[in-house]
Image (cartoon, rainbow, N blue to C red):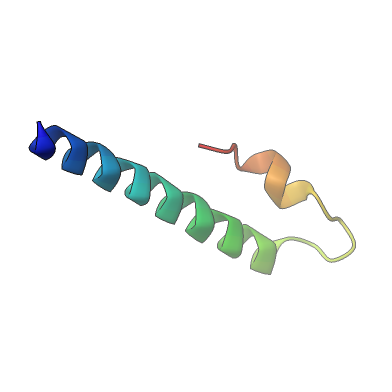
Length: 45
């Protein structure tokens, strides 16, 4: 049982890490003066 919980937590952590990384990359590369574009292109996991 604990192994399943550990796996689930690890998957959630990986998803959060990918989401944060994607948002950071988009925020750095998006055109200035267009807020909200990064959030629209990256769904919340």
